[in-house]
Amino acid sequence: MQHILLDIPSLGFFTTYAVLILFWAMIHYQARAISTDGLKPSFFTINAIVYVVQISLWLVLWWNPIRVMVILFLSKMFLAGVSLFVALGFLLYGGRLLLMLHRFPVESKGRRKKMKEVGCVTTICFTGFLIRCIMMCFAAFYEGANLDVMDHPILNLIYYLLVEILPFSLVLFILRTLPPKRHVHES
Image (cartoon, rainbow, N blue to C red; front, side, top):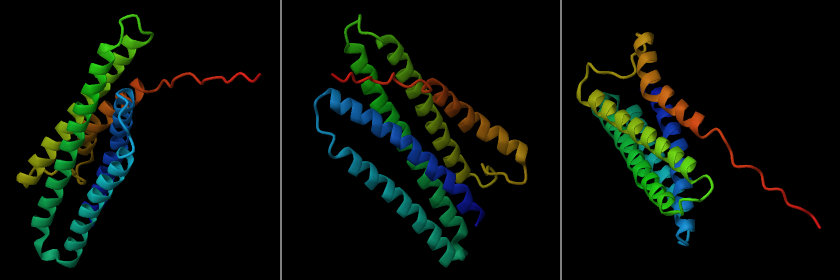
């Protein structure tokens, strides 16, 4: 049961950052005048598939606890693969947004700030999810390298602080400013 409780935050983490990728994809497609009709259904389908696969692995583990090691390995590798695809999503759409911003006229207001913002968020998210993927693979292949060391809270704190909390807190700090509200003048 402990491994299920540890996988739930990973799924929430995935969905949260997949929303940012969806947002960037929508900006990219709208800027190129490409229909965004398929993006949201694709987002929901991908999320549903990830959740169904992970819940299926939990159910198999519950029905057949004899194969605990095999199911735990598959679960770790699946979540590592999900992290890899999120990292690649950030690289793809963050890179496309950077290229798109780079093509804007130099005198465009806020261009440099947005380029820096998108570049930093892309780099942090890509690196964070790639490290997460590597660490999950490492934990899957080496039994002694358990990332969730519940009996060692200091190691747990250090791992999650360095790999998840600090990098993604930095992302929240970078994205903290919202665009100004548009005022509609009534005549």
